Image (cartoon, rainbow over all chains, first blue to last red; front, top):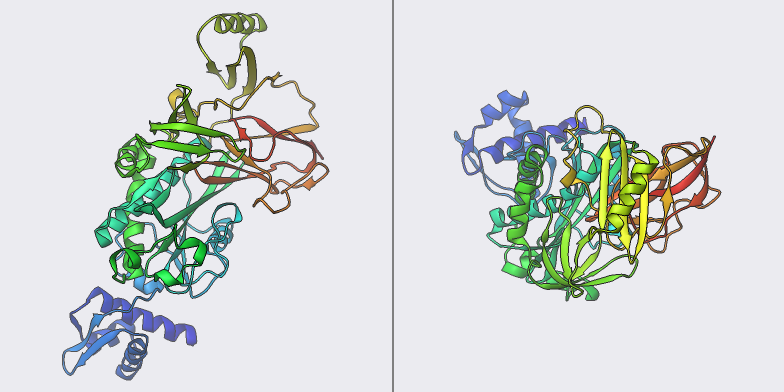
Length: 329
Length: 164
């Protein structure tokens, strides 16, 4: 029963979102969903309590004029311009980590494009178990499941592809132009705005799933960052002073990811490489690449290869291909 | 596969040339040679089997990851002649080898660890893509062949497993 009621409410919301700022008659809702007028009215009141501003005019119906920055499956699906990505959306109010859930779902056979998204992560992680700060309602914490039929060595460029998609989505939704630091850090004026963690599940000779985790600071006020992050992290709110609807940003990210993923599978990385280079903050500059082993290459970032490998012309005059390192500008 | 004389001839030719790295792949076999400060390293191994059907055609040679400059060192191995009870877990790509999920965590496996086909034994990371490598065989780890944080190459052996 509870489940069914919740679904009816989501369906009403979807109808209103699709007709944002236009009237939808109460009768049309009743006919579509097979429920009574009284039931519709109750759901509308629920939505109003959640922060949706819905006008109700006799004989004309209901009109949604303002939506709160709220995440739900219905919010993300209404207006989503994707074929496959986001067809299945798992939304949770609070999770330990969306990446963890996506891993379970991928092992369980979840289809390509399945999205896990949450308002809050209590144990969000970055790479190598580093903690990713993800407070309630202020950002986008999501994980997307891909099932690419690619040989292993062609999977790493997906991380550069994801960064390009996020930069394009931010530009489309906010007008801001962010930069990419190799391979996939998204920065605004040198401060980290988005973190991307990509993990692969593989069998002997086959990619089972690639899971792209994206953490974006959206409406985070500056005082919400812990002290040690204030100098290095930023949010859209801090940059522009405005608040953004996270559902719309997620739609933009999924749209860009789906287009670029298709481009990568059909045309290879070369087409995406040009975009990546145009957003890069490090090309032509002096950088320092530190490997996990402690080796350091200092030199000028010359470019990336058609596989996304960073080429650094070292002070020794040799060009070093960098597959894996932390980059300092 | 090339004959041993032909490989010797190749080593001589490359030794006397200005070529630093040489890679040759034919019919499922692969030879990689690298010169490091005068030393010549030869690694021969069977190339990875092609991915199953829906995968696009094998990438052209230029898309093969280049062996990185600082890894490798001196070693030489003959490919197919190995103890049938000892299985090598090899790296599926160029990248950084991690033995543990985070710097302060216990390693996934140690010498003596029992593994199943789906036991995660390590992570190999390239361009911030983290690949959890599974044992793919049931058995016991008898040797760890790479060091935590080391750059490993495509096809480089990472663990020896005594299979059950």
